[in-house]
Length: 146
Image 1 (cartoon, rainbow, N blue to C red):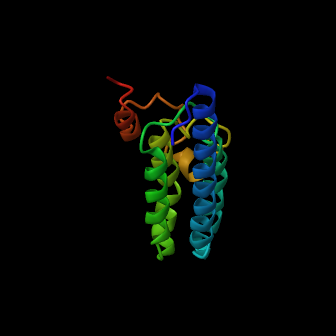
Image 2: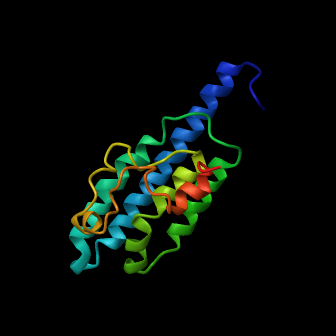
Image 3: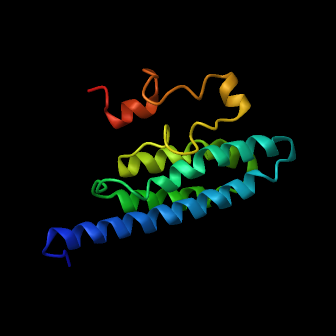
């Protein structure tokens, strides 16, 4: 049942969004724990988690999400739950937050924690200001350039 008044609809959507983001953060932490089992990459995994988890959590507060966002978040959580290879988990530590951000129409770059990229990311230029990268696949998906 859809609430009849706009404030009720808004509160329900915000609650659903916050709950979905909480599930995503919990799944992200589990992914990080799996990735931490690769001893040679331990510090890199910690750096990635520290850089993206605050931005991921910050997505709980935002404008009303697009239709299907909650389902997309749950599907992404289910997908990363299938990962058993710790090296693949490392790959997804920087990808998963962006997938969730796309689902809710947000951005994890430029949010709290996103500016704390690891030394490896800084060396490769991955910590450039959000929106400054014309070649970003996330910018294309968000259709900011149209």
